[in-house]
Image (tube, rainbow, N blue to C red; front, side, top):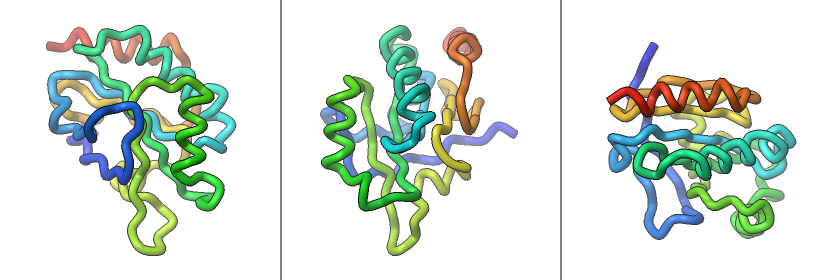
Length: 154
C-alpha cells in the first residue's frame, strides 16, 4: 500500500542551515535513513550507504536525510555524542534528532512510520509517497536501482 509520507518531527538538525520538511522537498526523491549511533548495522552499513547515495546522486534529484531515532540507551545517545559521531564518521548529509514526547521511549517520527528498529530505510517519491520501507540491511545495487527508477519517474 502506497501512503503519503508522514512529516518529520525533529528537535535538532545537523548539517543543514535550516530545518527540513518533506513538504518542501516535493519534486525530489527522499532517502530517509533511520539510525542510532550505537547500532552496529547502522554504523557498519546503513550510515556509509546513505553517505554514498548522498555523494553519488544529484542534489536536485535526491535528498538524503538521516533520522537519529533513539528508542533505547537514551542516556548514551545524546546530542553531543551525535555531533561527535557525525564529525568522526564524516557524515555530510542532513541529520535530524527524532523528537520524544513525555516518558514514551519511542520517538515520534519512528512511531509515525511504524518502524521496527534501526537501520530502517525509507524511499519517498517525488510526489511525497512512501515507495520503500525496509528494516535491516539493503543491498547497494538494489538500492541504487530503486532510486534510479524513482528519479526517472517525472
